View 1: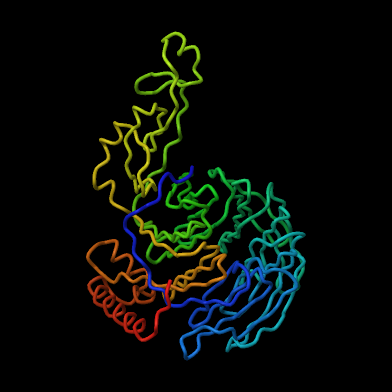
View 2: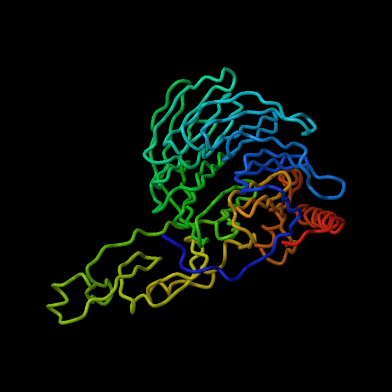
Length: 449
């Protein structure tokens, strides 16, 4: 179900730390190097680049490597400095970066797919390289021997991938809008279950191993939170984009989901609230409030001598209603509707101002986002776009006047600090950290958005 309107309020502009340019085509993926002032990117122009920040404050490529085909995806493991790159020709190539990130050595190549690689993951604990491709397949290889361990055929082109180390479950999304959960063994796999709740293709997946929750984004503009750990089949829908959802990240220490879309919007969702499932839409041949027939109900139209009406649905109760009985609009944030949607008159009266309190903040990235990476250690957010630009940001809101502002400062407050101080010490430490951040930002000339 597509979003009905663009959110207008609650907009805060994150501070743009760096703007990295130089790629000749779309930057398909990029990642911040933890504990380093560096970024790794792969592009449609067939290049792998490692960008290191210089004394001038600008990022320059310390590694520039050309590949035989367009680079479609990547996975970087900072512990081993292993970089896995998926290519448009179906190959997955592995490289080892030097300690100073000024050199890259080729390690291995896998003939993983017969078409474009859409996602690649390196699992250090298993020594596995997982990948999905447009050839409707999911494969996994042994990174030590280079041997293919297994292949699973999907019903449509596989588009995205996540993996749970504890249970060895792989989550594979495809163009049909389905998410398949696979149980991986050393040489085989079995289907655990499938999820289908989107009306469009799956474009992004994000797995939270702590809460055991899977988030899926789709070309239908929506996000669904699948509560796997709760074992109740709960699925929560989030509506906040006006174009397909391109990437998802989850900060489990602040219970925030970050989503970005092709509309250029970045949405930070507060998941530390009790959300409600959206109801299924009910079927009826007439309005479930005034009993007026819908336009396909010829018998009732003839019997009552009335013209048939168009059918609508209340987003809160799911009833099938005519336009007159569902003329009101309201936001329902706890159901994932941060902007105003159609509701029936009865539900409109039951929604209080407290129910309309926002649970998300909206930001404009000022480019068509293709991929996003969140560095949890520093709270930095990276976006890459089809405008060939990489942007690195931190939020600028350091106010404690509201709970939303407090959560937003937590977005840039390092996770380690939360674990070292109690609740009384945290506000003072956050102010201290925010002042340090402000001094850092003012010492470097911030480029324009």
